[in-house]
Length: 231
Ligand SMILES: C[S@@+](CC[C@H](N)C(=O)[O-])C[C@H]1O[C@@H](n2cnc3c(N)ncnc32)[C@H](O)[C@@H]1O
Image (cartoon, rainbow, N blue to C red; front, side, top):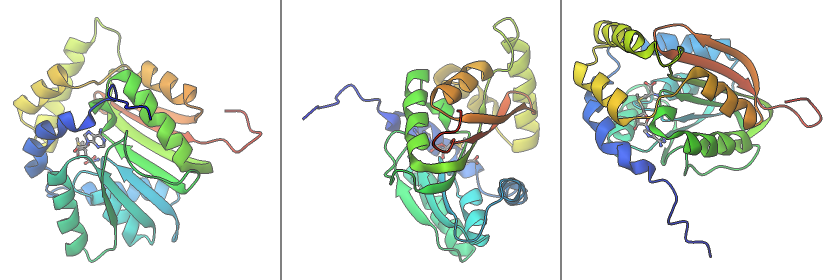
């Protein structure tokens, strides 16, 4: 059997995120934003939904409240513990999986919707592609993937300005610390929006929309084509 001792160790970023788990404590309007996104994506009662990199589980709980059958997946035990408290407090049934983008268990062609918000940047680009291929396989034909992440919308002469604007924005609006911004830039793997778009289409997705709204935020709506459709 292949040892796969070269496989990426996605648990190496746990230490980084568990230090910020305490600030993802739901004291904002993230539930309203999650509800709006899920409504826009057309979530229906009975849909199978996965939130990969679910953090404290706000979106997963909202999806469950809308009647979806939800898997909340995260690599960090600290985050999952907070997500479980959230689900208990909100009295919703959510399945939890302690796993990552490269290791979550799935049945091929089983999900109506996969969401991943601000988690993909934890992987270097090669491993982003591996994760996207896994998500593609997990989705039903015709189903949707909703991806949000911190990405660079500009070319290399721009990031300095972009990063400072983004730092100001998230420190002011999301109670992030300067230290977490530094950690993100120095130790994590955000990449260019055009790299993400190419990785997505190479994985087979149809790019329905790509928006670069808040500083350094990319929001992508993708669809897995049905057989016979053009990707
Ligand atoms: C910035 S938080 C975002 C949480 C939530 N999605 C949100 O938008 O509020 C990033 C999350 O990704 C998780 N994470 C880090 N690496 C991961 C991986 N390889 N696979 C899945 N989740 C991962 C972290 O534990 C953390 O919960």
